[in-house]
Amino acid sequence: MLENVNLKRKLSADEFNLILPALQLRLYDLEKVCWDLKFRSIFVFEGWDAAGKGSAIAKTIDGTCLACHMQLPPMLFQKLMRGDAFEQCPSCARILYYEAPADEHQGGTS
Image (tube, rainbow, N blue to C red):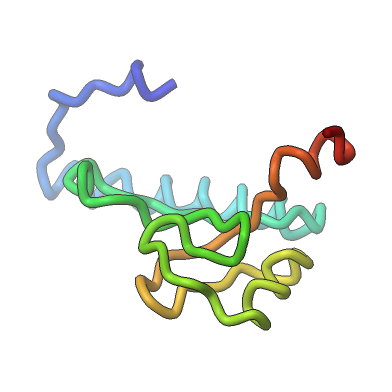
């Protein structure tokens, strides 16, 4: 999908201000549908200028933030494993999500 983005397209400040309300309304509608369906979601936007600087989101598998490689506090890691909420890494402030190790996904095959 991103391969279809025209990276050469430019908007003037006036054009941007003109289309922004409609885009914000579309985003609100999407957030509302997710809320109504009790579908956990988070919307994160990173500009093209962030390329190469890392991501605002990081994964943890074993209690370590895979972006900054710092060990997470055990209670924070437990909360992420339960899927209660999104949390931030206390070291790098990235939004964290938990992904079970591959062997857990496959029912513990070994």
